[in-house]
Image 1 (spheres, rainbow, N blue to C red):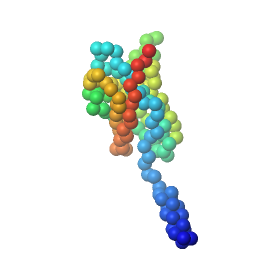
Image 2 (image 1 turned 120 degrees about the vertical axis):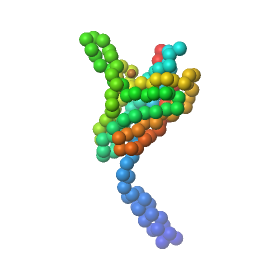
Image 3 (image 1 turned 45 degrees about the vertical axis):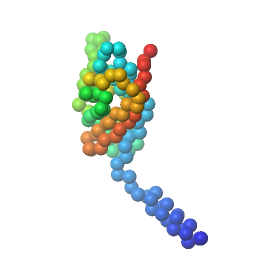
Image 4 (image 1 turned 30 degrees about the horizontal axis):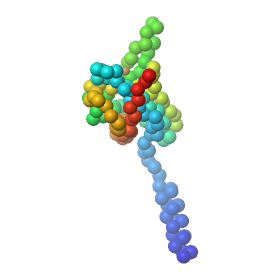
Length: 141
Ligand SMILES: [Cu+2]
């Protein structure tokens, strides 16, 4: 019995020391704003935490319930809030980036209405890795 336990502990030590080369991001609180009736566009929000030692750069997002998804930010332009498309969004190593109303967001176009949960959303990064998150549908107000 004693040797069996030793083997188990050795296995545990081995698997625990396997290096993780590339971990996905921790993505929290992903949701899609319920579109205004009659509109085929909306936005998605979430918090992206990069617990890896490498920067992760989001370059595209896709979903089978949206025909087109763009990365957007808001800018103040002479007192007017305007949206601008970004080519990419970098989540620096060890940092967290929030997509939230009035700031960064994923702009959703050509929605296939009505939307219903779950809303899987696939995010792809410049290292070729993709990650799918399940977004909630939330009505704001
Ligand atoms: Cu937008």
